[in-house]
Image (cartoon, rainbow, N blue to C red; front, top):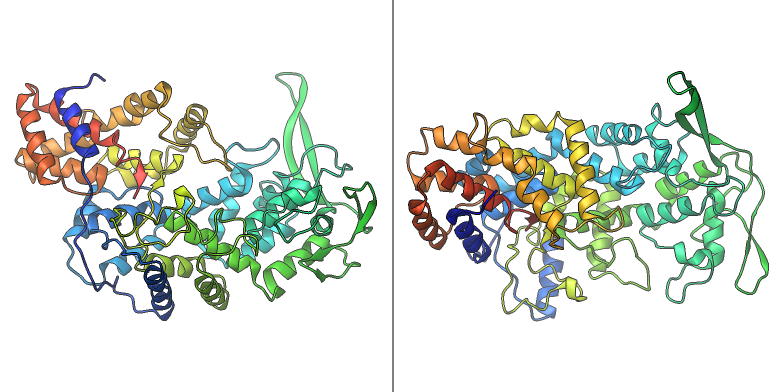
Length: 543
């Protein structure tokens, strides 16, 4: 698409605008909860101790876009955003949080987030993404306790689609089943994802900072030695060859210790031990023993502690540690009192993920604007500073969020329904996105490196072109034919709300009206404007 005067003007004015938030001294989402109150008090004490002034509370427009992206994985449909902004109820934020946690797209979003976390964006060979999604979807739909979900992931056996939980460990098993390396990745990923402990370096030597030692790595590793991948093939009459059919995770007999070599070349012996606690060495199923202690009997509740930190990072942009999956004395938490309290409450509430989200999203910290002020510029974790949560940290949209948000922006009314279908088209787009933008589960692909293929995918991709089309059903066409939008100002506001979740500032509107009057083709003017909004930095970040 060639840049018209309106598109250029829109890009310039959006880039130059800050999202204003009205200053508020007293604020509540409408939820009265002692846990939220405790978190608010602790965060506020951190501001006072560090001589920091928090940013104002986010405007409704900024906040509604954020909470939609974080909970359901896409921007709000225009009608939903408009209705929320117009609502004057004092408890509308807490009500919307509850509404989104009950939305089917909450299940869809967190199924995708955790599928990527557990097996990666690029599905390993002989692993079923379909099976993994099915298991997680059922768990999130029923709001199963997190410790029960993890228990199944650690103990599962069987067919990779009939019992989708097996895919977590299957994804980590590769190479010779009799080699020492076969279970190393399963050991490291289990500790990092579920316990918030990065122990991979201790495979070969004691870490100079991490309290985990080499013997602990191999003691943990010994729990997985009974797990083995079994691949099955079938005859393909078309090619006349045997091809992959399915894989399963099976039990193999292993009762002895694990032998490993230390840095001095001495062979050492390791028996199954969790965090210094011995378990039944004669147990028939070692993975089940590991799952029992992690998910049921661990007095430190490290599983809950790690999940609190990870979910705080999901919603706030940064966890209480950096990185959020590297916890321990070598990397102290920024707010240990909050982690202790949230962990205690999370475990007491039966590892309820929705309740954890409800606590976090109702805190004042989550409800602040992303705009900082001269008194909290130091609160910049991206520069290595300890997060103080005195303003919301800007988060890059994930690939799935970007796709689904563009799909919402494509159609005024059909966006939500379209999310339920078109999975094959979505998968093709995500593959192109990852190929062009790069990245994997360890390194989230960025939207800002600015290469020509990246720019073209955004500017001229099918979703953007469909969104700005003047054909029946596109959002531009809907706005132009809607009797509620009788003038340029109303139509421009509708496009802004659909793309950015807010109405244009006065300065933006003044410049845009001038540019639009200079455009001979009125339809082209609106197409240019919507194209510019969808390609602006403000659209592709979660603030």
